[in-house]
Length: 357
Image (cartoon, rainbow, N blue to C red; front, side, top):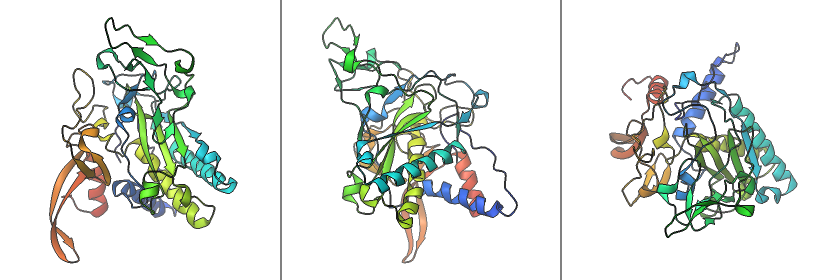
């Protein structure tokens, strides 16, 4: 599956005798699982304060650098556990920590990234942002900064950049906060911080079948790769039985992929194999354009307001009407969205032995 950051790679798989088909089927099912979402996971889109985060983290390189030139290393994932995890029964807490440990091992052996070279932090939220006074290092806030969240969790002071506030009247001389609004130490030796929670909120309440959900909160400014995310597991579905543990194991792997790449707030940041952005960026902001629409859409299983995410190019995800769409009652016309990046198309065509897909 083609991911959007230029530092992403999947190392070649060397099959042992007798395991070729097993491994091939496992990879196939995993890739298809992130394309066709299940009913066991809610797909939230980050709030505007979350999804617009792009933070300088000192990675080597520039937007024009080519992917092949970057020294990629196994991704380093750091989990941060919320009080809702610590308050679980001891057995359930142990299950969550074991599953997160398994997830970290899984991705570290399959994903390589251009490593972050300095402690990673997240910009504070603002009541109002001064775009003209903001940059990749600071987010200029009107008068004061707000409490900063990542998904359903409060961001720890350690991970916060200093509050950078500016008066609303001239002269607009901005100041960097001190004390509780000062600069945090950040997370060193890490490429991705995942805030892990077990909050009974969102889809955990509205849909009894939802096991959990996840989304990215912040991206680094050079390569657009997510560096903060939130994984929330619905507490009522956490348990030590084999049945619950096995369901959660698959869910955790699935949901972390939404933090890494598979989500509408990230589609506009997908890049090709050379590291070139697939979606056109604004010459003034360096960002894709926000959708001008004001309506609710569902794309690849994600529901969101169109004006809450960046508009991606149709070379990434495009609308399509399938007609006739064969169903038990007969042929129908199905309006849907499909991912159409070259490697996704090549994989699906080969899998189904259908060169016209």
